[in-house]
Each structure stands twice: as C-alpha cells, then as structure tokens.
Amino acid sequence: MDNDTEKKVEIENVPLHKGLPKGYENKMLVIVSLAFGFVMFDRFALANLQNYIIEDLGINYTQLGTVTAVFCLTWAIVGLFGSYFADTKASRKMLLGVFVLLFSICSLLTGFVTGFIMLLIVRAVMGAFEGPVMPVSQSFIIPQSTPSRRGMNMGIMQVAAVGAISSLAGPLVQVQLAETIGWRMTFVITIVPGIIIAFLCFKVLINPDTAGNEYEMKKRGEDISKREKVPFWKIMNNRNIILSIIGTLFLLLWYVCTLTYMPGYLTVEKGFTNVEMSQVMAAFGVGAILWGVLVPKLSDRFGRKPLVIISGVLGLLSSFGIIFAPVNLPIVLVIAFFGWGGVGVCALMQSTIPAESGDPRYTSTIIATNMLAGELVGATLGAIALGRIGDLYGLQTVIMICGFAMVVVIIVSCFYKESAPLVLARRLAAKEQKLG
Image (cartoon, rainbow, N blue to C red):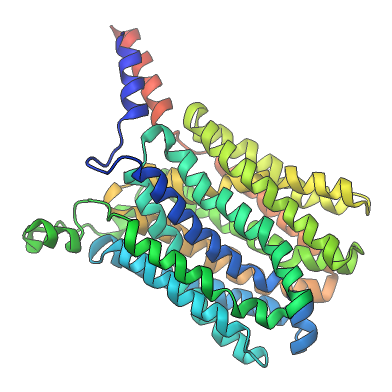
C-alpha cells in the first residue's frame, strides 16, 4: 500500500474520539438527529398552522413575524451562552436532554394561548430552550464521527432529519391534526415525543472527551485551575468562521422567512388550498432528506466550497422558481423539491466549515456564535421586516427578497478556504509527492 492510500484509509476509518462502543456513532447520530428534527418540527409548526392561528387569535402577518422574530432572538442569545456553558463546564448530554424536555413543555403550552401577547411570551421562552440544541448536538458529531462521515453525519442531523421530521412530516401531520382535533390539541400532544427523546439523551449519549471542559476534567481528576483560558476573539479569529457568520446572516433570512411566509404565499397569492400548500411544503421536506445527505456527503469527497456554491444555486429555485411557476401543483412540487437543495448550504456553512476551521475544544461556541449572528439579523430582523413588507406589498415581494438573500450566500461562499479532511489530505499527499 503506497503512502497516499495509507493516508486516505487512515482519514476515512479512524474516528477522532477513541474508546467508543461499537455501533455508538450510529446511535448517537439517530438521537441528536431526532432531537434537532423535533426542535424544527415545533419551531415551524406556527408557520404551518398560521391560517388557523391567525383566524382564531385575530393577528396579522406583522404580528406573526414579530412572534417568529422574538423566538429567533431568544434562540440565538441563549443558544450562545448555553453552548459556551456546555463547552466549558457542563455535561453536554444532560444539558441536551433537559433542553429537549423543557422546549417540549413550551410547545404544549402554545396550545393554551389566548392572544398575541401570550403567544409571544410562550414562544420566546420556547426559543430560549431550543437555541442550544443544534450547536450542542453538533458538538457530539464533530469529535465522535469518522472523518470521512463527518460532513454526511452533520448533514443528516441538521438537514435530512429536519427535512423528514419538520419539513416533510410537519406540514402533513400538523395540518391533518389541525383539521381533525384542532390546532391547539396539535401543540398539546407534542410533549410525548419530547419525553422519549430526552430519555434517550440521558441513557445512550456519551459526553465527548474534549480538553478544557470542567465537567470532564473533574471526572478525570485533573486540576481545573490549570485549564487554559482562550479569549473569545481568538476562538473566532479565522477566515472561514468570519465568512460563515456573514453568509449565515443571509442564509437564515432565506431559510426562516421562506418557511414562515411560503405557506401564506401559496394559499393567499398562488391560490392553493391548505392541503395543497401542505403538500408543497412537504416537497421541501423530501428535498431536504435527499439534498441534506447528498450535498454534505459529496462535500466530504469533493470539497465543501464547490458543493456550497452548487447547493446555493439550487436554492434560488425555491423563491424565483415558485414565483414564476404556473399555478399547477405537480410543477410547483417538482420546483420545491429541487429548490430545497439550498438547505445543503445550511449544514456546511452553519456548522461543518466553521467547526472544521476552528479550535475543536470550542465547537459548540463557534457554531452558536455563527447561529447567533444569523438568528439576530437574518431571522429576527428579517422576519419582522419581511412581515411588514408582506402586509404592505404582498407576500410575493417577501419570497423574492428571500431569493436575493441566497444570491448573497453564493457570493460569500466563493471566498471560502477548503476544509474537508479528505480533500486537504489529497492535496497534501500530492504536494509531498511533487516535492519528493
């Protein structure tokens, strides 16, 4: 076996985290995927059921956007501090399980709201509990995945699971339940899967053994006073991390606002029924399942940068394609499926690229900082602004702005430095061979 092949085999088959039980990687992936998939199932239930909620509570799109924005605000702020706490002081699996349980309770409480203010408060608290789930979940995947599966695993957890649970099952199940038992009971019964997922977090997950975490240092009997203190600016001082933060501002505007306002656009301006709308939104979910696995998996072998750009181009169809498509359900379903290829950018830009490029001890903090910027500007301010624009100029203008946001994401992606381990190893091997 030559040196190039040996390096490739080493990178593909040796997990970064030693001593894990056989089969644990797959179990870990399933649990964190369920956790984050259910987070997004609850997060976008408000959008999927907006026609029922707006009519019942007597709110408008500006108020709907405000509720979405406040949710994003608490999600982002608590997400950062909760993730830093998980990186430095706490048992990550305990935190993850507790957050899953608490946001499930808040989802149940959504079914009991009686007006705009109460809805705002409940969803704000819910956002605080949901915020740390994604970065803390990713902090399991980075050190506990085989390097050749890292991008794919992150894509499965962050995109494919969300596509299957939130985007595909979400609109179909939630709308059907709302039609049969009402939108309030639809929220109430969400406590059941939350309890099950929280139990699995406590029972099955193993805390990543990363240096610098006080909880892990105490378990190993190490002196906490000797823990290295790393300034926050040093953690963030990396070109790929900075580019990811800039890109995520526009990526989350595209993602959150498309999912928030597309149901209304399809029914109010395109003329589809609620059931047809749920089918189009489900087509987004089918696309997410495929593209959420395929794009990160291909990026493991061919590079993060080119796949981000290709995925971003597909994402343009979810806005411009649907706007200019005829009012024909089969055509719109196909466009939605391919257009949601843009979610492949999410796993790479929000998590994989910045995590691979930064200090591995602070994976949750890096991802949460990226998320904070995107949620505060792209999701929070974006949801409020686009809600107002929707009331003034119509939802077609909102969907078009989402498309232009993805154009900015594509431009930012062109300045990335490659971070995929296999690609970097091939380049290093080629360089050594040339020199030798």
